[in-house]
Length: 210
Image (tube, rainbow, N blue to C red; front, side, top):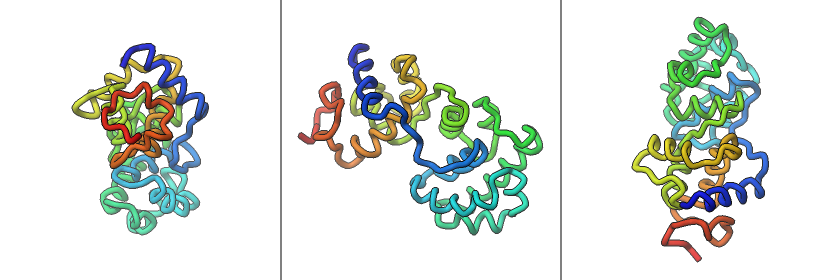
């Protein structure tokens, strides 16, 4: 995709949704971190159903540890891989208390050292919680990046690096939200809804559904 087309691509996404928001519910950086960890291989809707009641009783690392592993597991048992995720939530809570004064670090490398936190999770947290212009590539962004030719790549890291190069600086803060929402609701996995897509004339996808 040409530089001018990329500028126009994001200009239209911004025009449609000037202040995009993530769909995970949270009350502070800690609960955001927990929610993102729980969202791996799960839907945001499913995570929100579980974390609503959980965060009412445990919205700090100390409260989560006081709740204990069995009860945390019980709160999130409707989420896929809940056993391992419950252990990660307890583990990251312990580490936040021991190493970060119970605060969520805004450094991506420090975040990635926490149990259950990978590159994508760390990027989401520093973007939403601290306003850092990071781009976290999930399956939706990977698909949109390749389909449109905005940022083609064989894996998520390649797509991430390409996006970091081509996304104009003034769109960087919200870029990953726009792309996730576009992939989730318009450029869908099985059949993209090209008829309602506001950037279809800029897209290189050959099998458009119109």
